[in-house]
Length: 224
Image (cartoon, rainbow, N blue to C red; front, top):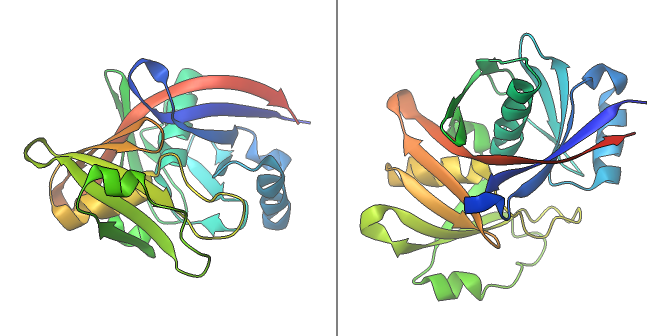
């Protein structure tokens, strides 16, 4: 038995919306990749994180159907949770590489690279209404990050994310990795509203890096 912490990441103002995330701080309680994948499938979150070493920041990330080298909302949520639990880690280490993490006011931030989120395709639409009206794309069409400017001068963007994996997550409420890709493509800071009301902030940085930040809210701790 071990504890599963559930948080919501990239919440809107006041803690609304956000994408649910499951985090096992004692990743060693589920040591094998096959067992971790099965548990992630059973839990059904868009991502589940296994913390293998809180001191060094080594983490392992799974969707219900795949292991990920990098993902934004799991890393933002996990680094926030570690900080809350008293294990402040300046750098997380998923499979993709070293990911700096830090707090600025009510927003928790990480730094990643678009190349770590390969396969996420962006598509611009002419209006927010067009994005809002989209149906879930058919399976086999790939990962789609649909977006439109809601206020281009200020960098405000409306997005929706469709993983297209066929694993029960038809639409992702908030996707940090896709936000990293879009920010790298546009080369500017963005204020993203995704899903039913999640907020993601991004900044294009030096050396082709992108900072992505958001609010995190605790939900519950389950014994599993």
